[in-house]
Image (cartoon, rainbow, N blue to C red; front, side, top):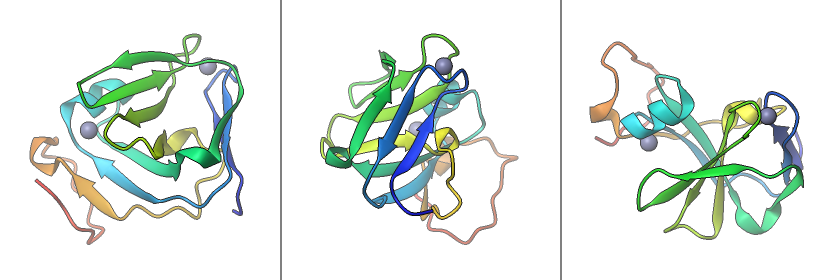
Length: 129
Ligand SMILES: [Zn+2]
Ligand SMILES: [Zn+2]
């Protein structure tokens, strides 16, 4: 899918777009990401922040650690963005919120050592503990 990448939450209150190509996509297995998404694994895709803009609605936020702020829809609860405070030039989007993520390929797994043991993805990608 060519840019812009568009997406939004489950109820439709929040819509966004990113007009540049993704910087990268990766899985995180940590316990914070599990709780924030309600899923056994997190998959985020980073876009240049200058290329990202909200089209509709305003997110609610939660500072889940000193490192990041999680954005979600206050109406339907969909997890949407992870704002990394030490990476101000990028904006991380939860890949499941995109309308079409078919051309985005993850390239790494992080926090693998704190993941759930039964989830094994045999994709051959690099893994960081
Ligand atoms: Zn919503
Ligand atoms: Zn994580």
